[in-house]
Image 1 (cartoon, rainbow, N blue to C red):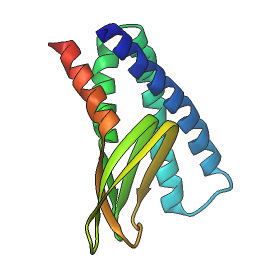
Image 2 (image 1 turned 90 degrees about the vertical axis):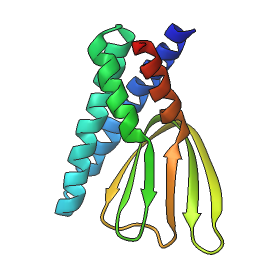
Image 3 (image 1 turned 45 degrees about the vertical axis):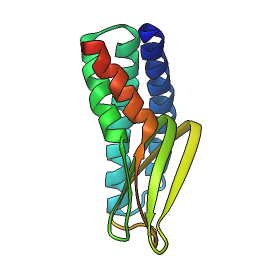
Image 4 (image 1 turned 30 degrees about the vertical axis):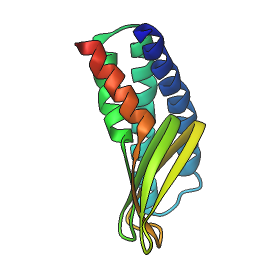
Length: 147
């Protein structure tokens, strides 16, 4: 069962990494502002690392497990404030978000086949903070493998 879950994590990392890498390369052209270019370049590096981590995880390399842990940790937070926004999805997402406004509300977002990278110095009008539950579960599975 554990091997099947690790393969599933690897497949989603490869798929999300590949499609996210293509999306970030497309985002580079036409040349935009400097912050957009920097964000796209960081996204290219992250999605390339996800692709490599998925391949190494499928080949049962210890480096793939370590790299996958770090990249799943990077996918945990979902932040949207008026001065900073951050989100990283590769493959699957199941977000539990708290919308911080009156009244407080909880939102759940779910997607399969989702790849997204957001790093911005601006964000939505309504603040929300959340956690990617799929990344949390994958992180737990990857930690369980080490034990």
